[in-house]
Image (tube, rainbow, N blue to C red; front, side, top):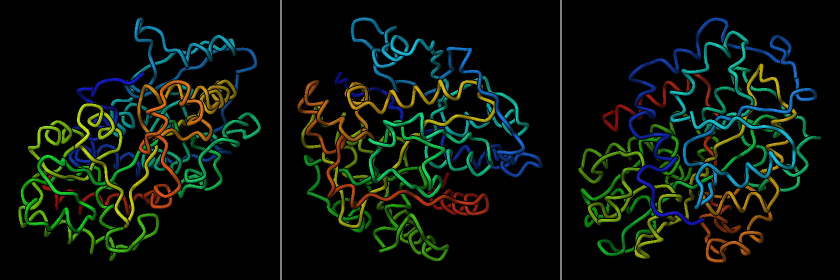
Length: 394
């Protein structure tokens, strides 16, 4: 289903008012990382799997991140087909409204090696990396995931926080790149243009998500966001500060830049592919740009937390969503990058126009320019977030 632009997209919920600024304003999420006893090990926190006798699982996801039936919104076709085929009952809850907020919900239980009552959770790369670093995520049995092994995009394998692909499986992915409104601005091709071009002064926004904005600037400086030094981060941050101080950047946003871009109130921005797809349904002058320096690739990942008691059932669910036909059904609704090879061919049967959209099914040229932000230690996360927030005025 191709939906109209939603008032608040899933990616906007990730940041917005509850994003990285909240992380530092409250101190709660990062403080929890350093709490004595928070770290767990596989040997020290053993989980029992009752899947053999209990055909059920609990699945926590973001709002509007599952396909629904246009005529009956209580029906979720791809999930309903899993229940029918597997006999596994799924309690599906849209209770992941923000990565840090969700971390706050479950950190006490996971730090104490206690059940959260959830068997599958969907979290963004950097939060998945944090939970993996803390030892709070169960290793997956690859023998139960043949579809994942066969169909996961190569660009999403062996990521820095999950180098052997045993802990996190992408649910959906997206790109952070450049975007502009062709009605009010000439074509933009580089990050440096965005930050310095006189005709764009005061008409530019960037993202409050540190990894996406700083990843773009690191690449513009010739450095890899997957492997950089503190000095390289500081160089990129100084470039951002100059654009702020000069008035080039109007403000930093979650996905609330999208309506302003559509109206022409802002001319260009660092933005997310999913938003630009939805804007483009109504206005072909809204363009997403992959600069030669590169784009950021992010994913929201399916994870099985410690003490989840239905791991094999969860693995069956994960494997189900890596069937290309199922993946296409989901992608036709959510409009983010589909992480499943073979889904593009299946999408042609559903919606040929979506199947040809490079922001849902990127070609090799785009993927070759896509980078994942490196996994950070607790100390690095605190250092980089603090510096970034000081520059953006959060």
